[in-house]
Structures are given as C-alpha cells and as structure tokens.
Length: 265
Image (cartoon, rainbow, N blue to C red; front, side, top):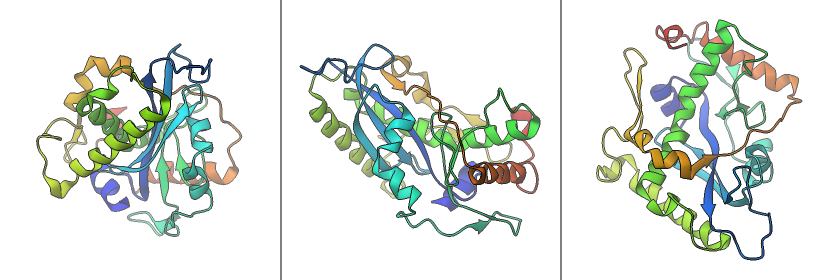
C-alpha cells in the first residue's frame, strides 16, 4: 500500500488516508438531540481509512453526528490499533534517496490529532513559509484518495445522497453494505468500468504533477448532502509527533522534492 501511495501520489511510507463524513438521517424517534449535528441536521458518522485505489481499508459507522472527527477517531478501534501498532506497521524505513528512517504514517486533515503515525497539515496561522506550504500541498495531494472514495461512493449509491428514512441502526447496515460493495467493484483487477469509468476519480499527470479533478466533484448535490465533520481543537501534540512531521517536511523540500511542487502553491 505504501508503494502505491508513493508511486501514484508522491508520498512515501504512507499507509492510508483518513477522513470522516456525515450520513444524513431523518430525526430518529425518541433520540432528543443525540444525533443533532452542528449543521442542525440529524446524522451518523462514517470514519474511513482509504488506500491509493480509493478502497476502504477500515470503516467505522454509527457514531452520532454531534461528534467531531477527532472524537469519532479516539473512540474507534482504529485509534487503539494504531497507538499500539496492532496493525503491524513495519519499522521505520528510509525515505527514497536517503538513509534517514521515517515511520509509516496515515495522512489526515486538521480535524485529527498529530501523532507519530498520523500526519496533518501545519496550521497556516502559525507557519507560513514556503517549506511548510510545500508539505501541506504534498499531504493534501495524498489525502485526495479519501475525498475521492467518499465522492465515488455517494455518486454511485444514491441512498447516501439525501436523508435516510430509517433508524440509525439500519442506516449503519446500509453504509456497511455499500462500502463492501464499493470495495468489490473498485478492485483494479475487476476492471468494472461501469462502476468507476475513466475520469470519475481525480487523475494525475506524472510529468507535471497536475491533478485533474474527477467528474464526481461537479455533482453539486454532494456538497449539500455529504458533509464533512466539524474541526475542533486538538492541540498538545507530542514533541516526537512534531519531529516526524518536520522530518517529512524537510524531505519534501530536499531530496524528495519534485520539480512542479512550488508552482502549485
């Protein structure tokens, strides 16, 4: 998986991209404000870790919509598995062209905590130099896979496009089912062009790094009915986590730089 992220998205030692989305529901009976989210709608959360081919490696669905990405993640089995390395990530491996060992990581957005195994962007209000902007750009490129996975999922499984007229427990089963079917139909060897035709997902020109947005991004209904989670503060990063992020930043602006990255800022 890390090799595929490196080849396709120029991000070595990456084991997946993490994000969460809200799945809208009708107001559950006798639930009060439990599922009432910051958008004043009722929802459950889908948390997903995605590989370089837009397939789900891990999903957690069912947390109430009031929770932030960080809250859903901290309560998931994935959090403990990453913290204790129950997923058996390999030991730190040298980044291409260097002898410097770097841990395998998951890439995420600012809603998640910074860990030695999870990289998030530098906050722009504190860091605004070329090197950190390059790191943020390279990380955002790798994170596109999870954005695409969600976009393809909703584009193909129309039950996710509006409010599900079912109870939360049934909605969980529906989401689990469509994620499983998505993985089956999105297998590279499956060659299911009817499910994932050329141009639906983002594509990258390897010569100049230019990303062409996938056709799913033009679906305006997805913007309204497929919402990201709220960003809540999760400061207090460990020194070691900051050092890992700095290590990747220095790599992307040194040996691991690509000719086109500065022009994308």
